[in-house]
Image (cartoon, rainbow, N blue to C red; front, side):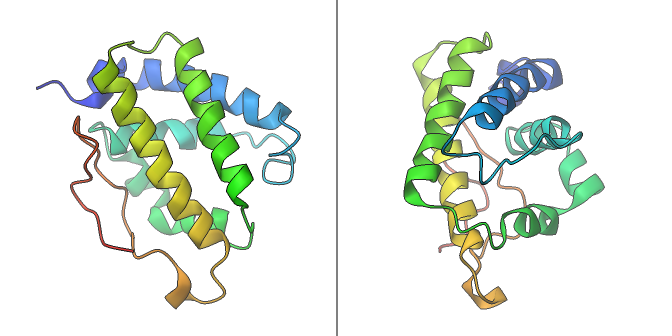
Length: 153
């Protein structure tokens, strides 16, 4: 079966998606506290993370490492409302960026973002390393919405 990465159009398709998404979060009043100003490599990093998670190259792990994403979210204190808005804007970006429209793909993307947003929210409130979500590597997502590596929270 084709990977989610290939189905999404590889790096080109995912980069297009992350550009649309990043523009949305930068403009959103609720998410302004989490995204106060544009970061030059944010779209690239998001693309690398999603690509690796969807079965593409492991650039995120090789170039940045999972600790990077933990550190980015630490102490942000993401609220449930912000988490949900993030998911909603991501799915709007999927709609607006010529991603495949088949329900299985859209569900896998939604499940991936929903899962990741919960991990980010937990890590954003972690006072100690013990409070962090146990996930320590980029999760590999498949069509069924299951992670190939899914440590229980």
